Image 1 (spheres, rainbow, N blue to C red):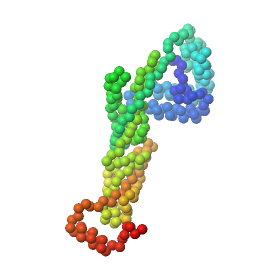
Image 2 (image 1 turned 135 degrees about the vertical axis):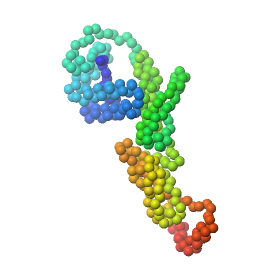
Image 3 (image 1 turned 90 degrees about the vertical axis):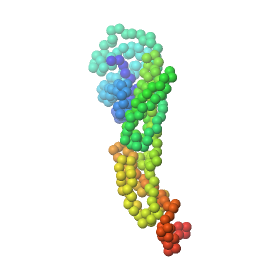
Image 4 (image 1 turned 120 degrees about the vertical axis):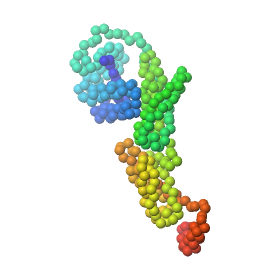
Length: 289
């Protein structure tokens, strides 16, 4: 096995890092290449193996010291060619013998391909439950290529899914770039998403608003009952905890019901008479204050 830059794999710029910094970098890298966000991507699986390998070496002080000698020498241009043919794991095991014949690298420098970014729209319901979508993109040679993208349940608005190696081709044997897909969650006719809160309109009749009532509403995954206190006004908000969008930690945000008092456009004769009677007997004046 040839030399691998473990610090680069963990996206660390220097070898002078603490155990906690190594652990934090490992968690971030492992999350980025997690199978759930890179479904069917074999390159992502290989990258995750390398990341785990890097963490095993750098999280151990003894093996990290040995590796740092190699890493420092490798970053010295004078010693780069000598180190390229050595087996790093042999060095960790105490075998520091050089390869019998050192080869001169005459190849051109490998260049990784450029990353590609795109975005797709998904409904609140699809984002809440998770869904698999197919997208088609035009390649550099003008052909269309279809990708299957697994969107995990509870994905956040604006979050990106990474498909490793699905970007532009690398040069001189370099790795392909990656494809980043930004997820835009679209509001529905019923729900609007604000962080982890789902907001909806709660339409009430004037008498329901005045007297109070219990209303059964459709949540995103089940029905629930909202207790409406008497005297609510248009614009008031009633919050129902744990009935909103997923927060990524096993919990839910709020369902926020915004009151809208609706007045009938057409009145039956007896309804009109009742409203006229209420007008004549009531002392309430909303413009008084």
